Amino acid sequence: MKILVTGGAGFIGCNFVRHVLRQRPEDEVVVLDKLTYAGRLENLEEVMAGITFVKGDICDGAVVKDVMDGCSSVVNFAAESHVDRSITSPEDFVRTDVLGVFTLLEEARRRDIDKFVQISTDEVYGSTASGSFSEADILDPSSPYSASKAGGELLARSYVKTYGLDVVVTRSSNNYGPFQYPEKLIPVLVIKALGGQPLPIYGRGTNVRDWLHVEDNCRAIDLVLEKGAPGDIVNIGSGNEVSNIEVARRILQHMGKPESFISYVDDRPGHDFRYSLHWERIREMGWEPSIDFDKGLKATVDWYVENEGWWKPIV
Image (tube, rainbow, N blue to C red; front, side, top):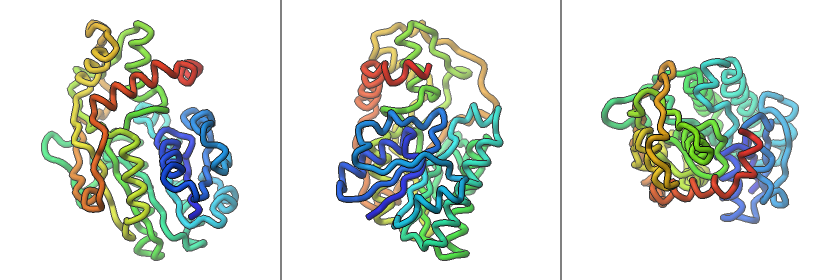
């Protein structure tokens, strides 16, 4: 099988490429990435010999046409993905997360691609104080980021009904793990703690996220690639609902640092309070999360401690 992985030099994308090469070394993997600030060639350094890498933009139809040649499947990780950046530069998010998806879909339609997996997010549902979102719930995004992701996946799903393209959408909860760009909560806190700096926590830190290790998410996405039916929407959660302040405390505990490092800062606009997913559908496909949050968090902290050469040039 020849798979096109767009955004494959980013956090989840590079971990997915590693997963595929471990599970099916006979597969041909093509990675397309624009190499913006969060897509780094260093993330693929260990696997470059096993892939074909192309630097390019998913909004560029000519590039997309070339890289999709001969591919049977497309897994689209390419996206602008940081909520804070979407508040200050929403146009970048609309361009990549909607127009980019359209460009990929059009080429996939022309080639009658066997399977197109659109990677979305639990943030498209918005916030909930209680209960959990199922795949059938109404979308209520709160930020330009989540709205652009909702737009991209709705467009992708329309290609199932209009053109008969085999499209599947995954909506995962908050990922963590190695190679995550240090603008997201966990790497920010670890790096701040390493430098003896205050750990910035929005508001009072009571916002709750369901933390999913990136390797568990990659296993689930690969299963959806194999078993997902046209038009399927698949939530991927883990049951690790932890508040931001508790994440900060656990990181400090793992690192042997005092809680006095925590510093509360003004909350960001439209900050969703809690995300929570029902994920029976992926469980019925045969998937369960395998990485305990405390063990996964400690391993992630250790990865950043041991890989200063990866993150220090960025920060």
